[in-house]
Image (cartoon, rainbow, N blue to C red; front, top):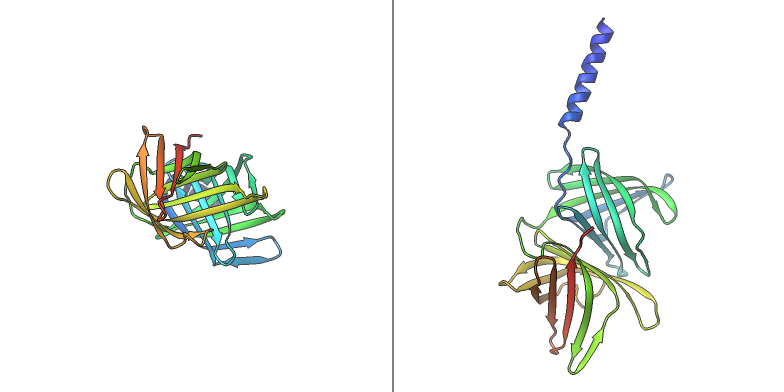
Length: 261
């Protein structure tokens, strides 16, 4: 009888713990403070990677750059959250000179902390080796609402310099949330080589049709640490056009549509 009573108490405690466990609430902007990779033989901790991750209500995007050599990567997709953690359904990634547009899913074990969260992917393939990935994130930004909040995909873009217009053929995504923004693009140079570029930082509204972006980290040294005034025009809730006027009066014009998966 005593054994049965102990079993009942243990089962009851387990049931209560499970019932009280809540799905993690992820919307926000987060800076990664450390990354650890364990391939079963060696554990390597990285603290010099610069990575920002943004979650909206449904979508996720991350950008990363190694400042010492400007090697960068990004990924974008949707996610769901339940009591077992977060499942990210990534639709596109780009890293250095390669990209991957095949859908794939990752199960993240999430532990939320006082100033952010920790995530663990127990079984991920890195450089053809099955590994355990551990990342620590700190929450950044402030709760605010802007018409650009969300994740966007570029539909077309071009530069105007004098009477010349140069069109671009590239894949680019952009995300805004909590006063932080990021972009990630895949492009080809004149030789046909694929290049990945990213940038992320803070933004604020400057009136109804302009934002101020400050790039904190980027693949491109010329924009890292710089502030840009970006004019934008919304076309409904799901499309917008942005224009950056450069010091030489040339302009970069980009068109985006809200990501819908």
